[in-house]
Image (cartoon, rainbow, N blue to C red; front, side):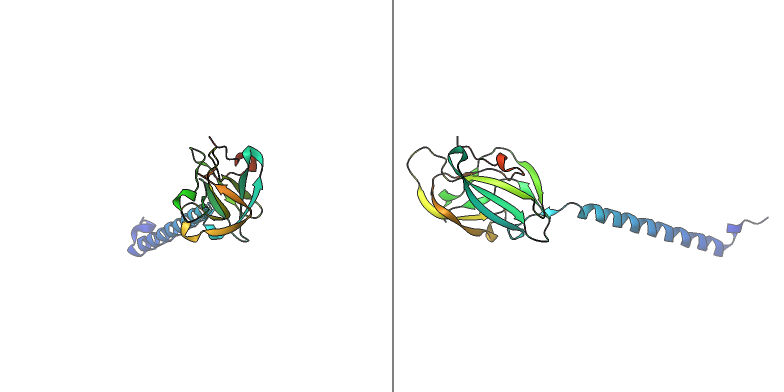
Length: 175
């Protein structure tokens, strides 16, 4: 008795069916991999965010920065400090108040991230008055925004906390 796969045409047919099955499996795997990658939001850039400030009295007074994603945007804000300065001089640029990177925060809808900026971390009477804050996501300084502060602040060695999911974690304490 002769095998069903004995003819050349039968072998070619089986090979073609097997190739189609493998191609379908590879395509399904590729689609699943794509879906998995898109579940992780992209990093936030400054233009993705609505940034606002307000003054807080805790810890001797500081500026609380609130970041929310703009409508239709979902992005991840790294747990590093915001890039900020009060003027064009390097001495008005903020420095980190924390020594480690915090957990990143995914922003979308009403979810907010908070950072605290202490404009004066020194104990003396020195400093320069400013009423504007230049602010951006760290690494996106070319696209910074300038925010008018509700009152002038004295700036001398400013420090900033990392971005945090809880406002209470974003209080900058001067050394």
